Length: 381
Image (cartoon, rainbow, N blue to C red; front, side, top):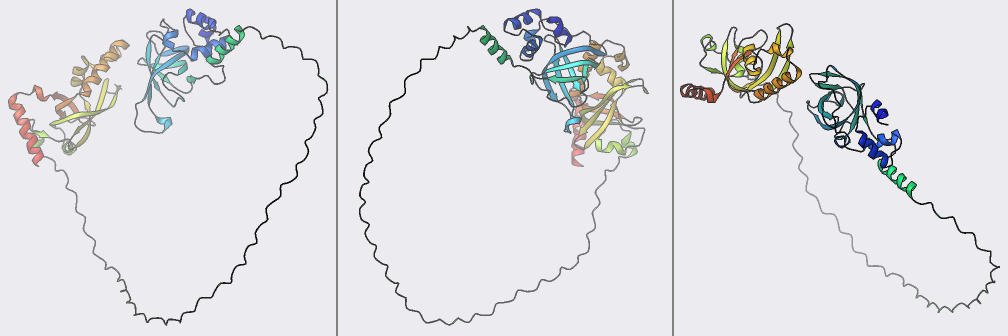
């Protein structure tokens, strides 16, 4: 029984299989139904998932959904980005749905076979997984009721039929009662003819005053079209101000600068736009969206600033093991979540580059006072 369940992707303890047999599950199908109705963390006490996972989760596996969340932007069902946390009862593994997986919900059992793995995350698709349910099988409650009925003592044999009795005595019909006499109905008096009311003399109609005629509506006179006021454009700063490292600019002025330029902007990282290895540049590229009160701008991290956040050159991530790579990427996400302050931006090949960050608490008193004066001047313009 234990080997048959393993061929179906179910890896549980032999003690649990024996307990299910004692509960009345004697066939493989009945044990399978019992498995679907139980918590996998209680049915398995030893880890079965390979560590590390490698590039493919080979073979058949039945895992339990511990958590599921829609992490993408609002989109149609086939284009949603859904993340899930799966477990074999002991070890948890993350998963991402590349396509819509029907009935993927908390506590469900999912059958996975030969699923690809990328960076320690299982990629689920409709062709390599499906959610299991109890439709078409016997419920666990029905199995318990059947086992109780089988253990009950057999019912006693039915008693022999009694001897037939003689014909019943004929019934004597009671004598009919005479009908009771009805009281006479009194005659209704004939209605009197109505007395016609006297006719009033006709009243002549009163003369009505003439009704005033409403004035005829006049067609509206054509008005000359108003000239549209041009929207004030953001004037680019002067060349002297463009190359000034001490004065603050806004993100709305960055597109108006002429390369080469270097600017300081007080802003923060709103969201991460791209993260991956670029073969053309030979390093990992981290693209984010910056925001300040004037607008938003997409920018790439310079290699020196990215290496400072990662604790080493970004190209080393391709050489370290999966555990260290995941730890570095988690530390990078934590740093990006609180990345704000006075950022030094410079002209890049396709978009601005983030050279360094100066936190407000790291500035000396003189630089902080100059920053406050610059912010005050920006708000007065």
